[in-house]
Length: 471
View (cartoon, helix red, strand yellow):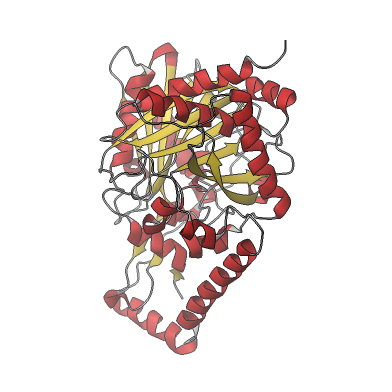
C-alpha cells in the first residue's frame, strides 16, 4: 500500500493559497572558513545526508477523482541541484539586502510537482559571511518526530560527523490505475477509516473544549474566545501575496539578567519585550493606546524541563520535546516595563498551574494548529479561525548554546521565518542560539512597510527592561 498523507498534512496541502503559502523557513548566517564554503560543497553535503530525511526525495501524487488522500511517491527524476540553489547579493552585501531576498523567496509558492522544499546558498554578505535560506512545506513534516533539511547539514564540530552509506533507489511511480486500485482496496478492507477519522476529530474537539472550559478563567477556552474574540488590531487585515522580512539580534544574557531580577522565565521576558515593542509601534502609527489595550498572541512553546534548558537541534535530542500552547493577552497598554513583565509572568504562570496547556493534536482539530517542526509550532493556524482567536503568533524555540557548523563553516546567527495566516500581517519567530536571541519578523508587504522599525523597537524595549536591573 502507498504511503498516504495524513488528514492533517493533506489539509495543509489544500490550504496552500497565493496569499498564505504553507511553508516554513529559516535564515542561517555562517562565517566562511579559509577552506571555503561553496555551492558544490553544499550540494555534496546535502547529497550525502539526504538519506537521513527520506521524505525530501518524495513528491505528492493525487489519486484520480480524489477517491482518497494523496500519496507520497519517490521522485524518480530527483535532482538535488533543483532544490539546492545559489544566489548572491550585490556589494556591499548588507543584512537589509539579505532580508529583501528572503522576503522575495518566501513569497513564492513551492512547486507541487516536485519534493516540497528548497535551499538557497546566498553569497556576497559583508564580512566574509554566507547564508543558507530554507523553505519546507508543512505537509512535509509530520510532527516533532521529524527534522528539517536545514538541520541535517549542521554538526557540533567543524570536522563534521560520519554519514551512513546511502543506497537509495527510487521506487517506480505507480500508475493512475494502481492508485485507484489501492484506494478502493483500502476502502474495502477498512471502510470505517473515514468515519473513524471524523469521529476522532469530533471526540478530540469535544475533549479539548471540555478540558479548557472546565478551568475557571481559562484563556484557552474555546467558549470564552468565541464570546470574547481577539482585540481589534492593525495587524489583522487582508494580506497580499508578497512579504517583507526583518531580522533583529539580541543577547541572551540580557534576558537572563531581567529574569534574575524580576522572576518568571526567559519566555516571560521575551513576551514582555515584544509587548513593549508593540506598544511603541502602535504609538508610532498614531493609534489610540489606553492602559487596558492588549494584543492577543498565540504562544506555542517547545518545553524541555525548566525554562533555561536547551537542546541541540542538530541531534536526536530534538525528538523528546514537549509542546505547550497558550493564548496570552499582551499588556501593550501598560507604560511601565516592569509591570508589563509582571503581567505577562502572571498570565503564563496561571496557564502552567491550571493545566490549560492543550495538546497540539487536539488543537489542530479545534483551531487548525499543530507542530510540523519545532519552529512551525505557530504556523498551523487555521485561516478561517486565526483572525478571530488571536492577533499574531510569537514562536519561541530554544536552541543550543554552543556553536554549530556546516561543512566546516561556523553558524553565527539563525532566524526563523514563520508563515502568515489569513488576515494576519505579522508573525514573530525567535531562536536562542550560542548566547544570542535571534528574531525573525515575517510580514505582509502592503500593510507592514514599517516592519524594520518593529525590530528596532524590540531592541529598545529590551534595553528599557535591562535598565531596571540593579547593577
